[in-house]
Length: 69
Image (tube, rainbow, N blue to C red; front, side, top):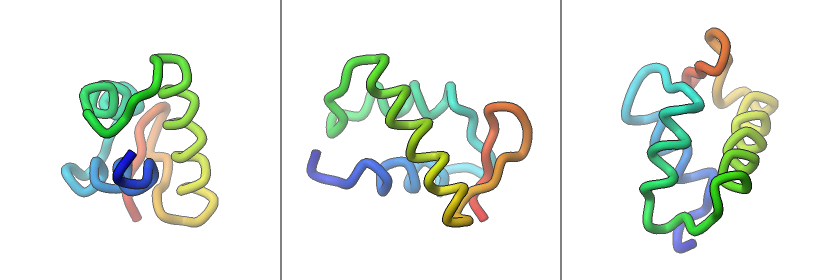
């Protein structure tokens, strides 16, 4: 990957106010810089979201929906 995985996810948050996990799954599965199979991709996305929550970069709005702080 030329970009860091976390940066790719942060860029997705910049596109809209709130984003769901399904939207992230779709966007990153179509991203040419991300070459992971489906299950590993979902795990990496959830792990990255969790890390961004712990560092107060994103917050959970409702089930599977997050917003950039």
